Length: 311
Ligand code: AMP
Ligand code: MG
Image 1 (cartoon, rainbow, N blue to C red):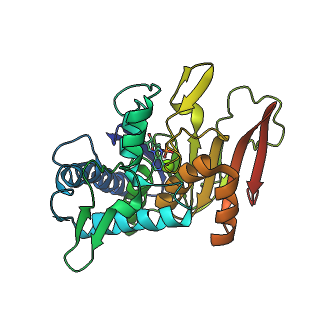
Image 2 (cartoon, protein in one colour; image 1 turned 90 degrees about the horizontal axis):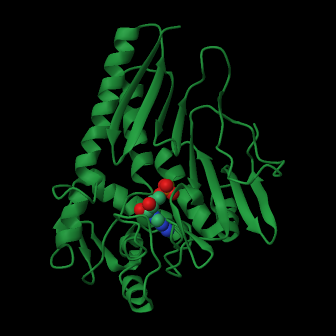
């Protein structure tokens, strides 16, 4: 069966897709539509580009209510709901803490206590006010800053999928930065796509780490502590920060979540890494069908906790 591959650079990462179908010309046209969707989002969501809706909010919403487009308004409300669901472990107002820990434009550093306290006071979804009637958002104090880095890639994949499905594509794989991957339908020769998750460093002895996971019409997101981290005072500090403590997450090294929505898996894998056991228990309650993999640090090594992973 013909196969078509496409790639694009957006949201500081690389998106790739592999599409299967009878007609390569139609597949390529559908893939290009999907790439357009992803590239369009970069202009709405990036906080690093001055003209995006999120940059606009970050610059002005502490002074006045700022109108946002209906899809961005809906995404921000979804992010708020995911924050509530995870007991605050996922929080798109994390930006002041990401900056304070030196991860915004650099590779990380330990902040001074006053800087940390100042950043913490600017973090919390409760500081973001939503005005439904006129689709505006306002921050209740200066210094609040949104960062959609933990949900944007998944959202982009969901949007790309709408374009692919509308064009009749029924089989393919699409990923953003390898951390979120969506398996559309099944491959031409099997019932499921088999996707491997990169093992954590020094995990050779971890026997219950899955070789692959089987996916069909599902998204897999993986958050990993070693993806971006620095060492100081004999300790390792990663780029995922617990909004409730202001400290880099340190109980788990890897978290993976499988669900039909890539927006949700992206946000929830971040939340699971940050909140570890506590968020794992919460998600088991709120989403009985969720499939998860969590690799926890123990006194002398690593330990796997998983739910529903194997089909
Ligand atoms: P991901 O790779 O999807 O887990 O997302 C990583 C990015 O999410 C980081 O680089 C930060 O920009 C942002 N981030 C860090 N901690 C959190 C958090 N607790 N909630 C939401 N976003 C976060
Ligand atoms: Mg994420």
